[in-house]
Image (cartoon, rainbow, N blue to C red):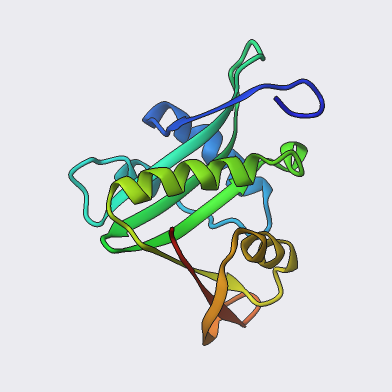
Length: 160
């Protein structure tokens, strides 16, 4: 339960969630803007690389709205955090941490020992979040992002 009384559950993403996930991504400046087909492909259990896609759902609301999501690809022992996002009006409630903790559980079950990600160097909130989770700088990709052109910082976390 969050400080405002809302209750949330973390579960696997389904095709029925994709519309809400896209709306969350569209509403956030730094979230990837993937088409519906990309999300649906991530849900394919036979797809390669294997992916884990989770959503945070508000459970005490009549709509059971999806308010966050996390997606990682796994090629054991490596995993890549492809996206993690929480709707702006639900941020600062610990949902990002809960999503990541649930993701780590699934990654560990899939024999992943290291999680990698890339993030814009100017994305201070994301960098603070990742550092608080224990990620460390492992490299840089020069001019990786466009619009605006910017370096990507590569971060790595070794799972315990």
